[in-house]
Image: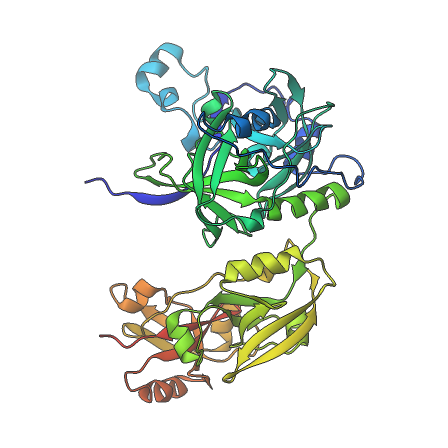
Length: 505
């Protein structure tokens, strides 16, 4: 029986064509600009975007939903992009190395040579202003040397990139046109599970297509598709070429940008739509677009912590009497969090009075604040709640260590060996000077510890909140565990996280 692998897929239809390039003639200055996501021209003034349009009269839908879709379809466009890539040897067609092929054609195709290739992609986009501003996915146009936009009335336009934000997978394009049909922006924050929605795009390049479904979930994240994830999940069919297309509500308002699906695929199979699609909510896409249009880039707030999910085991270990919240696994020095007194082991329960339920939720919310914004946190510490106020700094988008860590799983200690952490080992593990603890020197691959994620090179710094400086400290602390769940503070390359260790059954 063929095994199936669960995969997240961005749905851009891609075709690769072999081309001959003489002296890199096609690699023009424009190509360099597109590849580097250079902003074209000086930052412009904010644009006015239609919002809160009068809802379509629901009336009697005996004849279907044409009243909703007919005015919306012309505002969704087809985007065709192309870029020149230089493939590796293993990406060449096998026919070039076939003995029979070489017998007839010899070496004229160049044995072992790597030929440039033109990669063409098809996606979708949404017109948001009548003078040609288009919202789409970054991965639809990333690295493109040429972008064409096709309207429903068969007109074709050359498009330029105003700016992109790969961390949310948003791109803003511009075409030279006027009096274009647009989609009004809705309020994706008001969406609820069960609400009727429509996905519009150009799947497979066959032309404008609409599919219908419901909102299956909101606030989905943790897939690793983008840095900031707050997806709307739907069962409406989303297929190749739908990326960048529109998700609209029953009133015809834009509530999301279609971006990916979850599919099964085995042995490199492409998979297909299985009723689990994702869209970027307009509540996230519009602020990103506004910043691109106004400043030419996206500037985000920064707290300075690494966070993780509060599992039931961690909740018990920290004495939490309620669910939700996010655990602070590490605090970066000289950051707003450190300056405000946040500590490892704090659990953030609220942000500005709103409940915090998951790491991706807090990460997205903080990133949407402008640097310099004052925020108020409610935290759980030492068996009680406290309020902490702080002013956000600016996130350095090039410093990956500033982005909050993903949640980590629990692990078991059976099957591992530890040793003292020497200065030489600490240096090899890229640990800050003065780091104390014991390093995991080996893990039995068949043990529960290996299955749950503890790995060679992890440094255990605390056992049940007790600092560990040597193997004797570690052994003494573990001896007192008495087959009860144990809370560890684990350091991996300078970033700490908490892990609950359950006794082996």
